[in-house]
Amino acid sequence: MTAHQDSSDPADSQDSQPTQSPAPLTRTIVLAVAIWLAGLIPLTLLARTPDWSVRLYELAGTDSSIRWGDVLSEASVLLLVGLYAAVEVHLLISHLRARTTGWTPVITYAAGGLSVIMALWLNLALKDAYSRVRPCHLHEVSSICPAPDNWSFPSSHTVIAFAITAALLAVKPLLAWVAVPLAVAGGSARVLAGDHYPHDVLAGALLGTTLCLGVIALSALPSGRRGPDVRVGPPVRSPRRST
Image 1 (cartoon, rainbow, N blue to C red):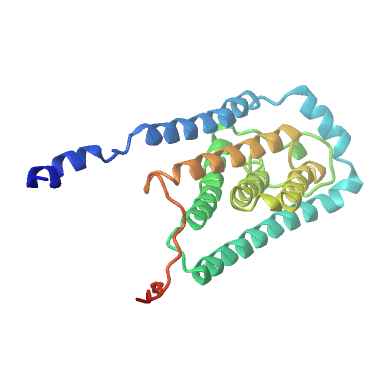
Image 2: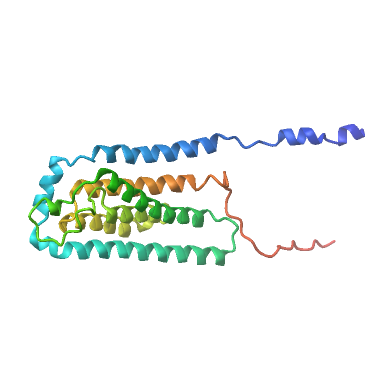
């Protein structure tokens, strides 16, 4: 056998290695944009107060419900925030104890937390843009209504609740049986408290959920394709073969 046959061309070996295609990057961006459009398009259609929302508000906003609506909405959001913080601590501790090099769950969860802040900021911008007066200023209800320039559409409490819920379910889907009822109760309580129309709550749920999911989708961009988590530990010595 000749030396030419034994040696391999380095250029050939490099060419044989698969190159990373930009297709995953493009698909990730398209997916995020599609998710955002799926939320923003119906949100825009809900900007005008529909008749069905007014009728539901008049049925739900009774004096008895207003008494505990504010308490329920605040409690639901606080419980979701506490649940989010507890899961974040659990993920970090589990990751450090497992001694793995993969940070995918932690990065995904951190992106979800960032999306909550982004959703709240965007929601405030939309409120100023649409300038929808709260229903408690237009209907005779006994609630303590916020200031007239504290606009109604979309509901900030609902945006926060559903953005946190989407972040939780992206990492811990089994928490759906806790997080989803809390988010629904928190949003519905805004109507019962007399502070929002039902369509304000629906718009807040769409905004919080879709913005969070889109940000989580984009969180895969910095590292591209991620491999499985690799456990880090002392090298394993192979047993010495007896002769």
